[in-house]
Length: 158
View 1 (cartoon, rainbow, N blue to C red):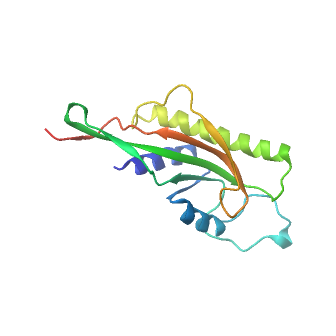
View 2 (cartoon, rainbow, N blue to C red):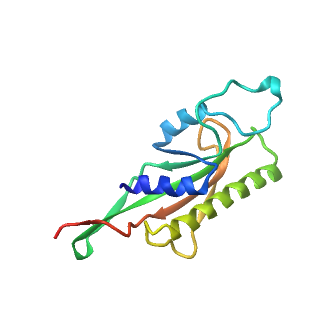
View 3 (tube, helix red, strand yellow):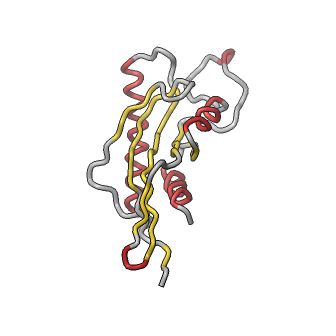
């Protein structure tokens, strides 16, 4: 099972998130076709579209490492994991803070399930995050965490 397949299992345990694994451009295109979670008057609602927000977007790693200790090869990619939800353009700061806190809660749930999954070595006690806004064409807000996902089990070459 690949690292990303393992990450998806963890995201599914968190629940309530649309999972995507791709580069930023393809995520941007897919998000533009997703249903919205913000409350919109019935007459302004768009027809149902593929997927729904909030989402967990894992961006294709640009770097990583392979741990070759004891002839057991383990993939250790550097992952940017984004927990995003749609917001209104020119949002109110307090409303945005509440949305970011919802996504922080999802990130904390993810970290808990990651650390207890038995699939990866636990993350350090402090996992830094960065608030997101205006990353994609659509108005999304949320947070990004950067983790080095080190597998517990690898491939044995002896």
